[in-house]
Every structure is written in C-alpha cells, then in structure tokens.
Amino acid sequence: MTPSAWWSSYVKSPAAFRTALLRWHAKAGRSLPWRDCPDPYAVWVSEVMLQQTQVATVVSYYRRFLDKYPDVSSLANADEAELLRLWEGLGYYRRARMMQKSAQAIVAQFHGMLPADAETLASLPGFGRYTANAVLTFSQQQRLPILEANTKRLWSRLCGLEIPADSSAAQRELWRIAEAALPAKSAGKFNQALMDLGATVCTARSPNCPKCPMRSYCRAFAHGTPERFPPAKPKRTAVAVEHAAIVIESGERLLLTQRPAEAIWGNLWEFPRVEMLEGENAEVAAKRAAADRIFGRVVAIREIGVIRHAVMHYRIRLHGFRAMLKGQKSRILDERTRWVDRSDLEKMPLSSPQRGLASLFFLDCSNSKRI
Ligand code: SF4
Image 1 (tube, rainbow, N blue to C red):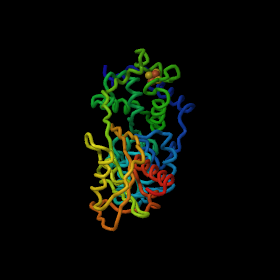
Image 2 (image 1 turned 90 degrees about the vertical axis):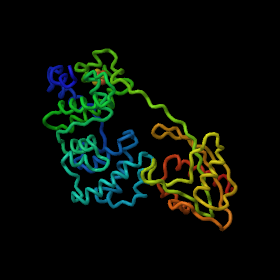
Image 3 (image 1 turned 45 degrees about the horizontal axis):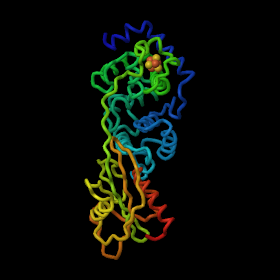
Image 4 (image 1 turned 120 degrees about the horizontal axis):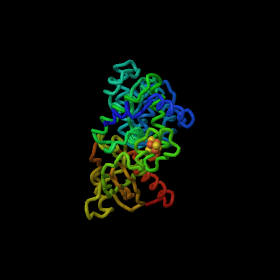
C-alpha cells in the first residue's frame, strides 16, 4: 500500500485525526511572534529566518528586522551593508540578499504587495514551493500543503515511510500526503499544528510517543522503534580546513576586503584571509593574505588568537594575526579591498569568525596599545 493510499484507507476517520491534532495544538501549540499574523510580508521574514536557524535565535532578529524594514518597499530600498549587518549572526547571508532581490521584484511588478498566488510567489528569488505555501497558508489560511524538516519527519513516521525523507521518491509521496491531509478550512492552523507537533513532540532523536495525540494513527509507533523513521541518509563527513587572516593597521585605519557576491559569506567584509596550503605555516599564510591585497611593508606580525567555526560541512580554524603597514609607499592590489576607519568596523557586516577576529584584535589593542 502506498503512503497516499494509507491516508485515505488506514485512517479510519480523517476528521477525527484532524480534530485530535487541532485539540492538542489549542492546548500545547507554541506561541511565536509571527503566529496568527495576517501580514504575508512578516510571515515571509519569519520563514526565511527560520530556514537553517533555531526558533529561539530567530525571535529577536525577527523583531529587529521588522522595526527597521516594516514592509516590502523598505526592504527593497535598504542599504545592502546595513541589511547584512542586521542579519549578522544568523548566517547563510544569501537568504538576506535573495529577500531583497525578491522585495525589489515585488515592488517593480506587484506594487509592493506579495502575490497571493502560490505559483507566482514560488517563482520569485529565494522562495520555492515550501516558502510560498507557508507564507500564504499561515497569513491567509490558503489550503496549501507545507513540508519542511519537522513535517517531513512527522509524516514519515505517521506513514511508516522506509525511505530517506530527502530522496526524491519520499519527497513526492510526502507532498501528496501533506496535500491530502489538509482540511477544507483553516489549513494554516492545521499546518502550524503539524509543525509544532514535529518540533516539540515528534522530535528527531527522542519522539515523546506517550504524550503524542497521534499515537493511535502512527505506523512508526506501532512498529515499536519510531526513532528509526525516516531512515537517515549517509552523513557527509566534515572537512577540516585551516585559514589565516591578518588585521593590518595604518594609523586608525584597518584593511578590509569585500567577499564576492556569489561566494560563501557573499558581500560581507573581512580582514585579508587565505586558506592555508598543505604544510604551510600560519604566519606565512597570513603574510600571503596581506601580499594578495596590498603592496607595501607589512611589519610587526604577531598571532592574536585562533577562532573555531563550522559552516556547511566545513570545520574552520582561523589563525588571526595583527600587523602594521610601515611607510608611505603602499598600493591596494584588489578593487574590493579598502581602508576602513576602525570606528566604522562596528557598522560593517562581517561573518561570525571575522567578527570574532575583530574582537580578538580590539582585546589585543586594549592589552597592549602598540604592536
Ligand atoms: Fe511521532 Fe511517536 Fe507521535 Fe508517532 S506516536 S507521531 S513517532 S511522537
């Protein structure tokens, strides 16, 4: 029996299934600032932030973001550096840049109003099926299915799917199930209930089946080992990399480089940095980072600390150095590099490891004023 057939035949009473879920949600659902919000823009902001980021972290960013950019046109006209600075700490900065691109398209093509049609919305930069459906079902109760990490896991268990939830076969079945399960009215509330159950009861490592309102409908529970569902896909092994970066001072100015738009940490600023070559000494690598960006005498180099950071499947160790530019003869070699007054550093968008390096630098300055 396919999982789709399961939905109509195995659940003796789909109506009772929905009622049990909604009753549980009325008592135990999460209270979040973007819940029951009729403004599609605000829901969109929350959904983009929640991609790859924990709810607890998102709450304060969400409020700050809406204070500064309360509607589509304010986001469309935002200064990119200020936008990225506000995003700093959430990571995956491409999300913010894509949001701004979409906001500009919405202003240009839809008079600043998010389209209420899921297909049109899904075609905008950074949207896709999940985000478009989530925005419209949560803000307008449109009868649209949603599927993200929590609901994938939940449906996989309820249906006893024995294939990794990210495989294309599972994706197809899960979307069909999520659609078949929707009630005729208040689909947004039903979708929120599914997400909350997945996030708080049917958790990845330890599903709390004794407290679950859907126990009697659940195939994985009947099986006896619910945490085995869905089967895990083989993990990509983390790659360890060593980077070296150098804070170069010239009076009150510091040398910074802007990252290419399409690279990781796109359009953020950083101190000159290189990935260390095999067998290369960190200080030699730091000098190489300096020599790639500036022609001049960089002296008094010394290490100020090491930052550890994980991003995507990389485990990065960043060796931080501090140095001074000596003499007047210098030339910047790269058009994305420039001198920045150290008092402006606070306003510049930096990646987390680079912000950590800036803190090490200021700590070192306060401990020993001169190199
Ligand atoms: Fe998840 Fe257990 Fe509930 Fe099934 S019974 S949905 S496995 S928490």
